[in-house]
Image (cartoon, rainbow, N blue to C red; front, side, top):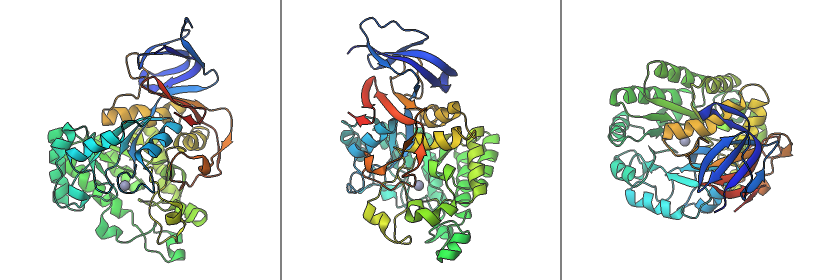
Length: 428
Ligand SMILES: [Zn+2]
């Protein structure tokens, strides 16, 4: 394969504290040099001047829906959506049908993902069938290539079961990804318990359903010394507990989604079921706390929680619609436009939280353009504006709250292992 030079782009690679105009040389699937000027020789030249070159984005929270819910998404359609969004790797959640709760099912998922344009890292279930009753075969799944375990979609309801899972995670050196939701508090809640819940006469999902489990698991992680990763934080109170845990040096990390960073409960009024997700969108004060915790690094990672559903499902009444929104094809541009251009985050922080930190926390390849690392690269156009159009998504899921939004930061080129998998919006 011919060597490739990405020529004249602005390279933003926080893993090397690099931010400037550089050429990037790629050969045999790896980044081989980053320098001011790399001679063309007989190399393939990709002119990226005026564009921004970053280590490929890594989404640690993607629902691919296959096997079992292929009408919502498949491994190939989700993989293409990822490549289209500038992602080079995604972690696939186990809440499929059947649930990915054994070494054999981890291997099956790897086979399913073999022809996918991006790297797919399987996540195993924490408990059998994600029912919360009996721990899954965590050690065997780790050996088969699971990068983490979770019962996502649900939290582990029993403290004793969570403790047992964390002990097994510690033995296998895998993180537990916790969806913090105490169902004895959340019940059949539909949205945040503010003005809108009263107006719509729908049951609320109190903040304590999140904080109670989050605090519980932080205590358990401290005791078991297992790696605990808290998924999709939604509330200022969660950030405060996380901050304390980090100050005490506990092995805890956390993520936040683009929708929790950008929307509030008030958006439910216009977006209806397109703003229905778990945990729910909360107050403007909660959103502000999530944004500043992300900027400070208290929250480590931005993860999409890409949750495709069919249009029929999402078009039903608010109470009947399923929870969740898609995110892979919109995350970078909406965050760039609404956080970086607004001065809330720097571009370096955004790339760090979407690429470098996910690689480090989940111990995955990528997240850097250091010579010798895999040539997983994304290129974005931060200059021109465009309108987000869900009808052009590669994902089967069109359930985005950001349709029609004018943004900058369009993904224009994605390389995985040195291979071009997306160029100018076309996925290969
Ligand atoms: Zn979840």
